[in-house]
Length: 196
Image (cartoon, rainbow, N blue to C red; front, side):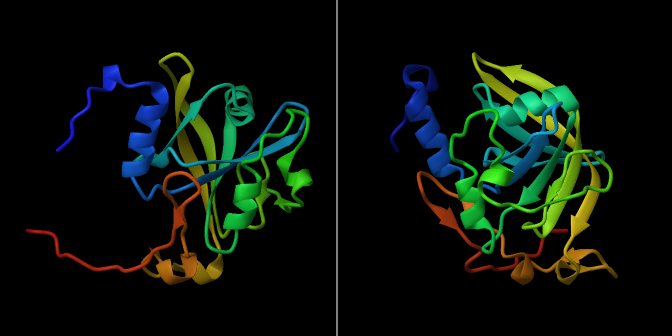
């Protein structure tokens, strides 16, 4: 095996090793809103479930992002999941735009009212997780880790078996982030029984 000490690598190399090996990563497609009501839409793949009780999501940010600034100001955001049907739209919202331009308007995304937060949701997503800021932790020189508490779950009707709350993965069609310009879909699946 090749071994590298993290403190001897530059930031770009560390990013390549982490983002290229910890794959696939789910993508948080986040709507946030500034105090003037301008809606920002952006994707983040350093994202995951942190806890189920309370229901927490984790997202990390680097640099001075509009989404982070809005979140720290209003304490609310909506996290949407990315699927095979909306991945192209999601990718468009990764474009760098001026702070006064809304990705929702620029890329003709349809905003719909959320149930429990002021920030609107994206009609283009079949899973919407409305959240409130639970904790913010500055990291290193320009990093930020946020924990978001889910206050409302919205699923397209065809995704959820309400009798046992199982999500139909074939209908969810999730997309994961790999490295560079690469993404993945579910592909082959298998089951393993947990030892008892």
